[in-house]
Amino acid sequence: MNNSLNIGERIKTARKAKGWTGKDLAQKINRYPSQISEIEIGKKIPTIGTLELIANALDVGIGYLLYGEKRYESDFRNIFEVIKKNGSQSELRSLIWLFNVAILHETRRNQSAIEQKVKLLQKYEEAISQKKPVSEIKNELAAIDKAITETQTHIQSISPCVMEHLEISNL
Image (tube, rainbow, N blue to C red; front, side, top):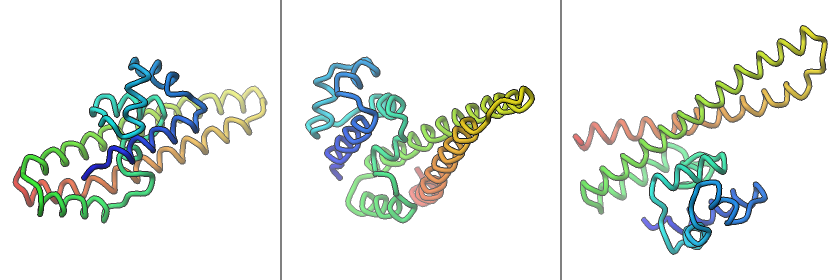
């Protein structure tokens, strides 16, 4: 299951969407530009730690970097079945661990978005009490609600599959 090129392409796409160069991303995560380049062209596979730094800097989920935007439970089941059938217990454990890291990352993103929403709601209340315009705050709230929904969807699509395979494999 060599997904490093797709990971690199998704990193590059997310980086360019922010208008950043490879050097910009490298500076933000305290890495060398050559490391970012090697990851983006698929020459190197990033560690989980580096992947999490990149995801945080680009404000995307690890799940997006690993699998693309729209991965659903059936995709995770298919990946597990291939590893279960053709791989070792060690590879299966590694894959489950990787999915758990993705769940943790998405949970952190969700918590951060909820904290942002609370602050915006306070700002919204202040603006209303001071009779200031609130349309910009409403737009920010809508964007945060979308992010919360997205992270919850990612978590819900990964979690059941991981739990089912942990029980089956007695890992």
